[in-house]
Image 1 (cartoon, rainbow, N blue to C red):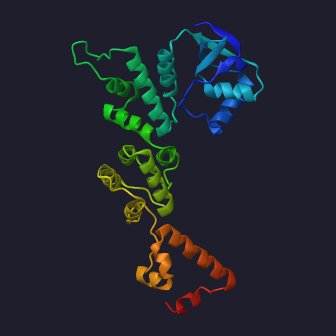
Image 2 (image 1 turned 90 degrees about the vertical axis):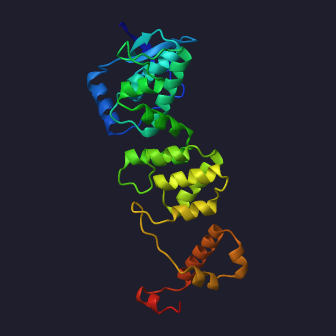
Image 3 (image 1 turned 90 degrees about the horizontal axis):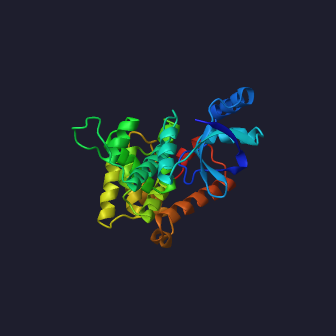
Length: 296
């Protein structure tokens, strides 16, 4: 295909592009390579209205060229419909080694919708065999089962706060607060308001739900029984993959608190206790050894 130099300021980002462009080590290496050797692979664009172009493949190269002060970039211009452009954009970007679950989720969803818009008939490798579903076709292309493709697409129904916990399973395997794909799928069936309750409970308890707990949470939602107190009880259960939490004698704590305070929300009570401890520690220094001599 013909390669032409086009003005960078005429290139627009792909609408709802699901892939993040991170200025990490690999990006800095790419930028240095372009600075020394120039672009080895041209970007791919399609022409849109107002004499502009839409980026399809090469977002990282485009950003590197911008930062290096270049005004033009080598490009291949393709004549594609919107749906064809979506499919090519997804296909080219899913070849990368580093892809977050959220990126894969929205990419699969975009491709699936584009295939449906086209009314494309999905064919099997065996002409005499059964026809494949769209999700089966996508799975074959990217080494996934149709079930996994559907699971990833369900992640697009998560609020950003919960989806971030899913991405953390890929970014940092040692991260404590992460959510696996299967429990995340269960949570995706909750309403947005209920998902926000779950996100608040995770932050409050510093614990994420296991697969079994996520199923329990979804069942409670179906029965209209899900609330913040139940979520706190579920997430405070001890799990092998969570840090051990400090526990206190509830009756002794309540005996020391004002009676009116006990009628308030438990999180308000927690904040009251924390403020009281801060006030106490600011006015009296307690040696570690002396703590055991306090009248409990």
